[in-house]
Length: 523
Image (cartoon, rainbow, N blue to C red; front, side, top):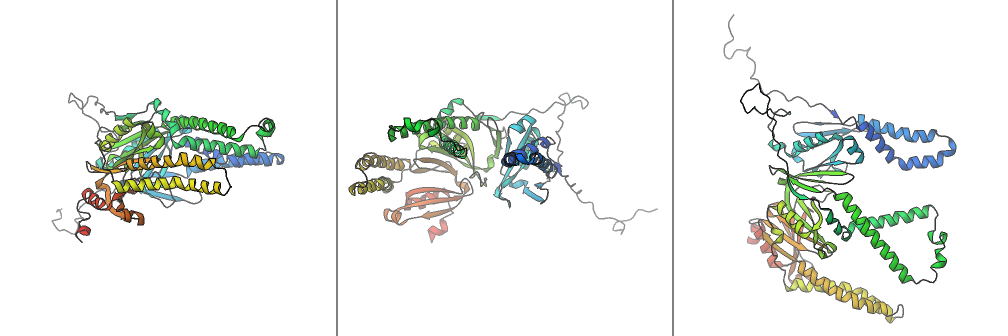
């Protein structure tokens, strides 16, 4: 028998690359059969309370159904949720009656957040939230896998963030390391995993800054509102029931207001400290030894681990509300390219802490200490504008009180008090607002500072600037000022340089992004 020669019709086509096997769909951890029913029961808790109250005279079947139905829904949620990871995308399929399939390209993953509520921590489970930087059709930014083992969640996070370094078609298991003796039969030496570099570790003493943030007032206001609504719903009148209406009948209003304000301030301070500790306890900022990603871990009852690629970081921002600034404290955030819409394109890398700590953390994120560089002031015209706006804002209520007093609608002491307090306060506020204005170009970063009540100090990498917008109001044109807006995909999508001289604004934009404005300047 002869072999078929070259060009024989029996010769098949050249063999191509083997087809990639289709990845199977996977379910979440089986322990979610315990978690999903509990979550559904808690979700239906108001309905269950109503069934207990209303259906008490109609037997116990309604109450039993109110418990059994959520449990069955929880079990159905587990069996109707599946996911898989293909070579180029992550897919999630869920829904019992209406099936929904979500997918995200692996090269579009911007950040991965691993959280563990109390129930999940007891069972060794986690929730993995993947952000792709764009809103999905359901309105969620990214999607979540609720119910992965902690070790599996960390492996998934490493795969999603560092996939660019993976070798195509490489085995997914650990690679063996040869024995130092060279004997292939000898036991392999396990690979050495270097620990991450710790950039910041939480100090409980930082909780002293918590009462100076807005979170304490928000929590205290919510407690007061919910408490008052609950008392009204139960038909309780503490003043009448305790006989306080007769005892307080001769007490003046101002002392009562003062006592109420003092109680609210104490509640605000306590709420702020507790909320700060619950949210930030164990806060740790680390960077892997290869310099690929930053990891933030924090939380007392619910732990959260957020990882972002360093390649996505476009700058840093100090948050300096007036309370923190007066006590020498600040918070630090990293600006992320293509960041989550819900998070504002930022990731907290340091909670409220001493300003030195905040600046040092920002320097580690940026690679330089640009936020400590001196800034260029915006000149006399900007000073006059800051002072005028602040004084007018203080003079308007003062003038209204003077008119009311002149018409015998109010006594004169409120107008005098407003003139003595508000006008000097307006001057001081305007002076501080001007002192806070400034900008600089440092190490390929545009550094901008502004704001008194809610101060901000931002360093944005000029490589992340994709356009400029020069805005002028009628008053700014008369003063020769402008607001220069840098358009970017990081942070809040833009950065404003407020009340800068118009000619200086154009020069600043041209220096920050050479060549971008050349066609417009030449024209």
